[in-house]
Length: 126
Figure 1 (cartoon, rainbow, N blue to C red):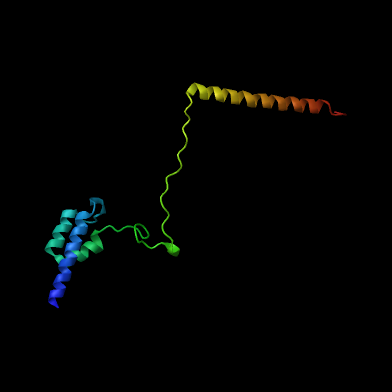
Figure 2: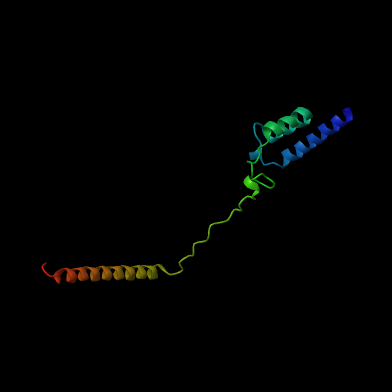
């Protein structure tokens, strides 16, 4: 029985050290990585337990591979927004188009104004 316990402790310590070394510094909490390495090596059982309980930053639930997602669905893939087509015309061409558009709407407004004047002046008894 003591042999099995020793093997489990050593395997846990090795797994904790590999996990600790492979992690980015931003995923380690409460101590620097070197401090956690010393703790796990000098106190194998307690250091390993403390690493997995306190020192390791876990991903949010449902994130990553194999995470639980509601209703058994797979997580939605991250899709980039569609690219906005670039206008390849020169600035002068764009300004000319805008000037033509403004002129078009001004003419349309003038025609509407004249139409209202004609309709209003031709009404009997007015």
